[in-house]
Image 1: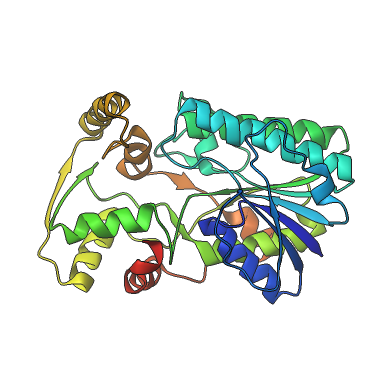
Image 2: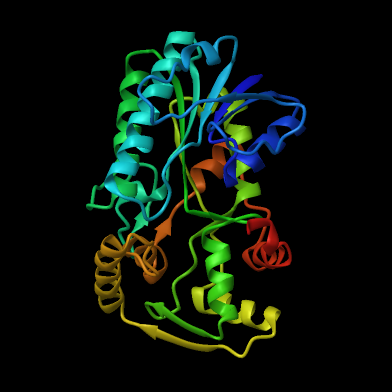
Length: 322
């Protein structure tokens, strides 16, 4: 297929481009104006999805599928999340329809379930807005794409991964490695909850399989690794690998959440990113059970990269993310 990828220069995009090329697909990578090129033997297009004047339809002509990865991730303002996650998605979908490209793979998130702890969450679980800019705008993006699908304009597949990590990860892995290296870590919760992470290469493998599968049309898929260790086990193993004597403490979730709220308020005054956010506390401070059986049954997907293995690789190539 000839595949058009938004957000191709991002962490997930780089891995997916390589995977699609390895499978023999032709890829057009959409990059931001001025964004550094990091691909070979690939067509490059440049547009800013937040600009209302951006003409995308002409770029999509002649493609067989669109993979929409571009988005505001993690702790972001409402303005940024609406601009990219909602309006950016709306523009890409409209351009695909105008160009006659029906196959559309959308990268969403398990955040659409509203971070409900201790409850099995399948793809049929309700989407739940909780006042989180990232998760709530991901819900809105899914809704507008489903409306296009219901109108017969798109053949849609939605992927909902947990937090994605791996080599070159500038967010979760890099921050966690830095925290452990400091020798002192204060984490929300009690450390016994399983870490909701999936390796970027596993996600790219599933995305490639879903894109090629007619059975995946009209479906949503949770993407998670059920074999992950607990947060405490992960942090202690990282300290061992790094040769760090780690002072590890935990604080109750409500206290951590309140502290994150205050950190966000202070960040708004200083203009700098908070050291702790409610988004991050929600992600790692409680136990969640995202059921990913559908991808295994329908697409034969099983994560290949264990968390200890994946984090060791991220540690060995930490400079790739700097």
